[in-house]
Length: 256
Image 1: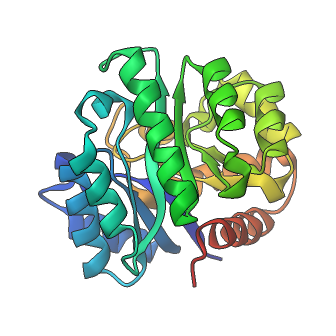
Image 2 (image 1 turned 90 degrees about the horizontal axis):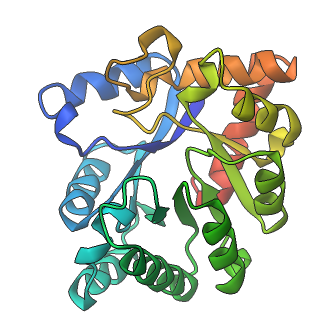
C-alpha cells in the first residue's frame, strides 16, 4: 500500500536541519510521491531544487495570498518560465486568505486572478488556498472558467455544500490532518459525503499535524493518519482509500 502527500512545504525553514531524514521517513512509511508547494519566489526556487534532488518529489509554483502584495510582472515571469520544468506539475498555492489578511484583499484578488489566467494559458492544474473567503473563492473560480484546467481546493475548510459545488466545477477536495481531530464535524461530514473519487490526501506540513502529533511539526509520513481517518469515516478498507486517492492525485497532476 502506497500513498501520496499532495501538498507539503518541504522548502520551509522547519525542515532545514533534517529535510533528508524527513523525506527518508516518508519513503519508509509507504509515501510513494510528494508534491512540495511554492508560496513565494524564494520558496519556489527551493521547491524546484528539492524536486530535482529526489525522483519521487514534484513541485508546484505560485504566490500564496499572504505574499500577494509582492506579485509583479517579474514574479509572474519566473513562474511562467519555470512552469515547463519536467518536475513542475501545477500552479499554486494561490487564493484568498481573509482570516489573516497579510496582504490587502484587493491585492489578493488581483494575484489570484493573474495566476488563474497564467495556469489557463499553461494548461496546468491549480492549487487553491481558501480561508474565510469561501463565497469569494467559488465566485472567482467560476468567473475564471477554471474547470478548463482543473485543480484542488487544498486543506479544505468549507462545508458540504461548498465541497459539492467545487466538485461540480471539476475540482478535487484535499483532506488534511485536521480530519483526525475529534470535534472536526464539518470536515468529517465533507469526507462522508464527497465521493472518494474526488478526494486527495495532504499534510500541509510543517503545519496541521494529525491528532497523535497535534501541536508538533507535521511531515509527509503522517499522511497515513489522514488516510486511516477517511477509511474509518467512510467505513471502507484503508487499501481502497490509498488506491483511489493515489490514482486521483496522479490523474490531476499527470504524475507517472
